[in-house]
Image (cartoon, rainbow, N blue to C red; front, side):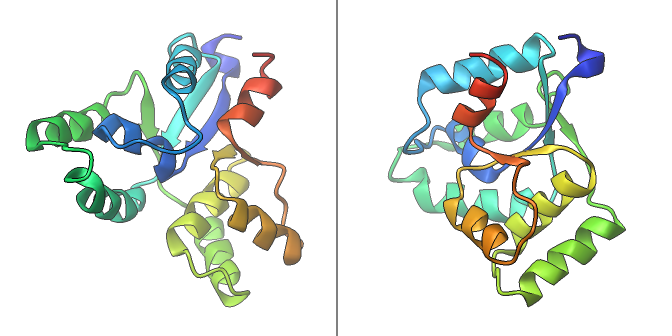
Length: 160
């Protein structure tokens, strides 16, 4: 697959925590290396939505001492998220914000996930997330969920 036909994927916070040296249950170094490989070869293109900083900084702050993450590592990680070889930053559009609000109104209280999911859905992208509660919510309120996939689903989809 070349870059023109890369699978476009909006990334959830969970997949960014290891960049900061914070472990995530169910996400191995091998998984992260394969995601990196797929991105570098142009099989997938990873997208970040600026609202993710709100959640990411809070999680990193809470976990940094537990994982003994120093300021140098945090600075490096922040800088790496702006590396255009790996990530492209996109803004949610009007339709995405409208859908995110609808999701909140329907009972899903995680505004960040609502915006990330809605951005992915309205742009015909995949949403890389391990959030099972989100999938259950989408099922309950009958919103599409085929675009919400874990890294394992993504690897299977791509034949890895």
